[in-house]
Image (cartoon, rainbow, N blue to C red; front, side, top):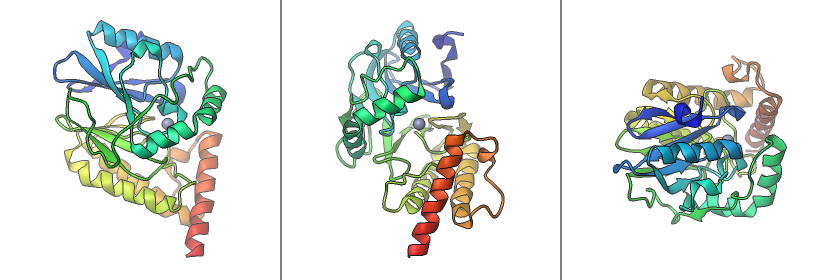
Length: 269
Ligand SMILES: [Zn+2]
C-alpha cells in the first residue's frame, strides 16, 4: 500500500497516517480551500516523509504550515520534499528543540535507520501563550500544557472537533512523565484536566502513537490515564495498567522511573 492509500481521513479535511515505528502518527490538516495544508509531526523515515510529500502533492495540496507538538526527535522530523513552510512549536518547545538538536539527532539515529536528522532544529517559535496557529487556512487551536516534554501542545481543529494530542492520550503507551520537570506528576494531572475541559467538543482524538478514537474513547483514555497516575505512588498494588502488559523494555523502564520519582516527591512533601 502506498502513502496515498495509507492516508486515512478521520474527519472532513483531516488526514492521518500511521507508521510502523512505535505506531507513530502524522496528521495533515487541510485548509478550507482544499489546496493548502498543515503537517503535524511528520514521520518517521526519510522515505516515508518523501512518500507523504508525494501523496500530498498528488492530492493538489501545498504544505503552507507545520507544527511540532513537542521537542522529542520523533516529533521534529522534516524533509526538503515537504517544502519550506514554517514549522511552528510553542515558545518553550522551540527553545528546547534548538537546545537539544545534537542529542535528538543521536537518539533518532539510535532508534531508526534511514532517518533524516537535518530538520531537527527547523522550528519557529509561536508567540508565548499563543492559543491559535498563525495559519489562515483553517482555525486550529493550540492547547499548551506542561506534561511529557517542555512546551508540549495539542492542537484542536475546531470545526470538526479533532484533537491532535501529541504524546498524550495514547492507547498503547502509558502516560510518560517529564522527569526533568519540577513537579511532573502534578503537571500531567493538570494536562489531563485541560483535555477534560475540551472533551465535550472532541469528535476524534489522534495520539502521537497509537490509534485514533472518538469522543467516548477520549473520555476512557482520560480516565485510564488518571487511574495510572493514581497508581504510581502505590508501587505495584492494584490493577496494572493494561498498556504495560507485554510492553517494550523502554516503556517498562519509564514506568519504573516515574514510580520512583513520584514516591520520592510525595515522600518529600
Ligand atoms: Zn513520540
